[in-house]
Length: 204
Image (cartoon, rainbow, N blue to C red; front, side, top):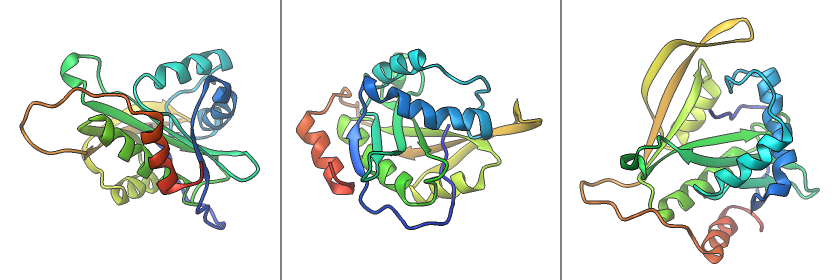
């Protein structure tokens, strides 16, 4: 699922962008577990462990770059990544995208920078479709995805129970490519290709 909210503060115009490594799992986990415990952006209720997230980082990097945004002091402001949409081979060109910003960094433009960079990388890799699953209701995240070019393609009501309430789930879709031709295989990017994209949206 995805989260991008609004808080008061000065926009972060040039965060330091990088691709995550296993050593970043702890910082990523701190952001994610805050939402597990305090928010309905994720339907997970039990916090994840560091060991789980070290493995998660390694597995996520097999699909696409896992992007981090840090401030000038090195604090992690947010992360964005992609996962396979479904496991069947026919879905090889589809991914589910996820973004989480630190709860005190929401609304500062970090999510926009991360999404733009990751979506460009996904297109360069040869992906065609990007999906996002949002807790329903979540008007801030819906607005964020609309601005990013996503459209809602379905809603399932009364889907998950968390924080003493029933929540729905909405599915959002962005087409990176259009056409009926046979797609080329998805391919990894070189380090230079990745760095060239990151430099467009932040410092590296």
